[in-house]
Image (cartoon, rainbow, N blue to C red):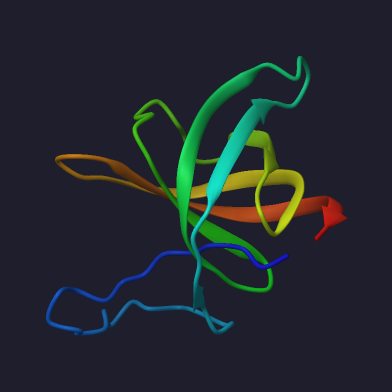
Length: 107
């Protein structure tokens, strides 16, 4: 599975000086479900935006996600445990970058 990560390109396609990407990103689409690790209770859903070999970027409407939180995820690409690395809260939605900690299935 490929993971999503932060897309620092603005609408003018400028790249941030602080862009620290080590892996190429690919655009991705599909529903991702995130569950609590311990209780298997669904917490929220989001739309995948891009993926890399070790992470993914998700667009969602759940502003209480914090860096360091871990969730079990199910996506069109893979499932496993992912850790929140960063959040960007925008007017209409939240973008979150996840690092995949472990994979259960790779589709």
